Structures are given as C-alpha cells and as structure tokens.
Amino acid sequence: MIEFNEILETNKMIDEEKLDVRTITMGISLLECADTDIKKFNDKIYDRITGLAENLVKTGEEIENEYGIPIVNKRISVTPIALAAGSAAKSSEDFVSIAKTLDRAAHTTGVNFLGGYSALVSKGMTKADRMLIESIPEALSATERVCSSVNVGSTRTGIDMDAVKLMGEMVKATAEATAENDSLGCAKLVVFCNAPDDNPFMAGAFHGVTEGDAIINVGVSGPGVVKTALSGIHGENFEVLCETVKRTAFKVTRVGQLVAQEASRRLGVPFGIIDLSLAPTPAIGDSVAGILEEMGLESVGAPGTTAALALLNDQVKKGGVMASSYVGGLSGAFIPVSEDQGMIDAVEKGALTIEKLEAMTCVCSVGLDMIAIPGDVPASTISGIIADEAAIGMVNNKTTAVRIIPVIGKGLGEKVEFGGLLGYAPIMPVNRYGCAEFINRGGRIPAPIHSFKN
Image (tube, rainbow, N blue to C red; front, side, top):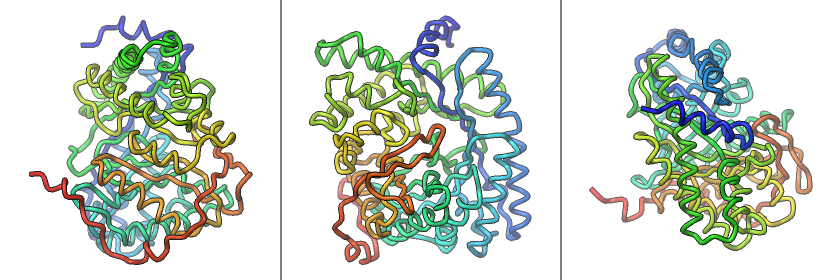
C-alpha cells in the first residue's frame, strides 16, 4: 500500500521542480474486432476504443485534482493495426480509412494521442505490413492524433533491411506530405529495434499481442527533481552521486505507482507497468541534459557524456524497481533534442552532434529522438541512420529507435518550431557521404550469435 504521506513529501517536487506523471496510457486489444469487411472493422474498433476509454480523460483529471499531481497526457495504444486489420484491409487506402477512424476515436475520447498504427517486421513483411507502411505518409498527414511505429529488427531475428530501406523512404515521404506544417508528421513516426509491448510513451506506443484485453500503463517523469537533488552534492564521489539519483528515482516512481493504481481501480482495467523514464520538456529546468551537466560536464556532448548518461540510466532503474513491482516499457532517460532545452543549447553551440547522440544511445532508453535535419537529405541516408540505430539495439539486446524529421525547405542554420511538448529544434548536419549501395542490397542482416540462448 502507498501511504498518503508519501505523496505529501512530493509537494515541493511538483511545485518547484516540475515533477509530473507524463502519461496515463490505456492499452486496448483490437484482435476481437477482426472482420473481412473494412467498414465493419472500422465500426468495431471505433466502438471498442470509445467504449473502453470513455472515462479515461475524466478519471485522469479527477486523480490530478484530488492528489495535486500533474498528469500531462492521457493516451491510448492499440494492437498493431497491420495485425488487427490483416483480414479487412485490402489496400493502402483501406489502412488510411482505419487511421481516420482511430483519429475520430481519439477525438471522441479526448485523449492527446493514439498509438498503434504500427507494423512488426523484424524478420519480414506480410502484404498487410507493406500496405500499412506505404500508407503512413497519407495516414499521418490526414490525421491529428494518430501515431505510427514500425519495428524493423530484434536481437532474436536480426534486421529486415528491406523494411529499413522502405522506412527511409516513408520518413521522407511523410516529411513531404506534411511540408506545409514543417514536416510535423515525422514527429508522430518512430522506427524501432526491439520494441517493447508495454511502452506508454508516444510516438512508439502500441498494445502488444502478449498483453490482455485492456491495460493501464503509466509513464512518469522528473528530470528537474533529479537535477535539484544533485545540485546539493557538488564535489561528492560517485557513490554519493549514485545513491542520490537512486533515492530520487524511488520517490518519483512511487508517485507514478499511486496514479497507476488509482486509475486502474477507477476504470476497472488491470494495472500493467510503470515506465520510469526521465522524459524532458522544453521548459527551463526540466532537462536530462541539465542533469548530466549538474554531474560535472561543461556541456552535454563533452567527453564523459556517455559515461554520465550510463550512470544516470542505471541508477534510475535501480531506484525505480524498488518503488514498483511492475516496471516496464522503456524506463531510463530520454534524450530528445527538440524536447530538451539543454540538448537544444548544446546543439546550437556545437557541443553535440548526431554522431555523439548515436554514441549516447548505446546506454540510454531509446535512440535518436526528435532530431531535425535538412529536408534535402536523401531517403537512403535516413535508412542508413535507422540501420545504425537498429544495429546498436540488436547487438546490445536493448530497445533503440529513430524519430528523425527531414524538414522540407529548411537547411543548416535554420530552426523549426513544433510547439507544445515537442518544442523547437535547430537543423542538425548529417554526414554528406552516401550509403545507397549498402541500403539497396536488400534482404536481412542476421541475428548476432548471442541471440541463440535457449
């Protein structure tokens, strides 16, 4: 049981240090909606989503008001649509109609985002997978709240390079389809390796096939809380540093545990997991980069950055698993550029490059996230970036991802404003040497030898 006094001691964190619960996400299985008729399928998924999530937003707001805990987003994730709609959708146009139905359901329930316009293609693509992937540019340009993800690799299966090539093309096509809005569609599209089934964070959330009919997953945050805690231990050794991060993560996760249990009880939906990721915002003081600099780095991106991030990620997890019996999702530290003012500042002064960010992804929760690049970067180069991240995930048996935004019509020296939690980003340079011949080989990169453990 969680005592109310545990929440009272977080008042300072909430009022002064930007502690929040980033999201309550209801996962909903759509497998029972299977149908051979596209109209019937759309009707079924709309009714199921709006029925189960009817009170999700209201419940989140009630918990927020009663406990004084900010809950920034209320979201829905659904079964990967390429799986759920395999019998109903006969064309990419059918898949677009499903995306519009999901968007309508999101508006009806009032959630901020709905994730699961997704395909799992780590070893190969079915006809339905390919049709969904090819529909992504139109689907994301025609909807407001739908998010899409594609898993192109895993430690057990290797990397589907045909899917990697296709996704580079789809990222570029999505950028072009939403060019009038600074290619914002790409902010709702993420390419994974080793995607988890229970991630509550967008744009990568989907309701995994290993999950039940419905589930409540909660994602906590709190970079500002950790930074404030570290500000009081200047000059202390690494043991003190680690203990401070761990204890702070414990307190942050307990807040998420309370919210998850309350939401589960009130909605009558089983509690799934707490994702204890440190998710930054553009607000000053709510920055993962700020934590790393508080550890002693002159700027994020300096030598020592990867080691500092590895320490942070590990101690956050060690503290969090003591606070909740069910920790899952991604859990660790996010390093998006546009959503973290400290990251933005480091890019603008030349301390942080895509290559350094790639090194950091070896030890953080996800990967290259919310990075704006010139709009004229070729699709094959985007595929190469995806392949590099997928290789890091595959070999190291961890989740990695790419959410990259080639901003059509903009180049180096310019900025792009996304607004809200998405913030803004300077356009970052990309290596100008090509990889098209490598990407065009086709086929699959095999799984690493350590994957064959049974």
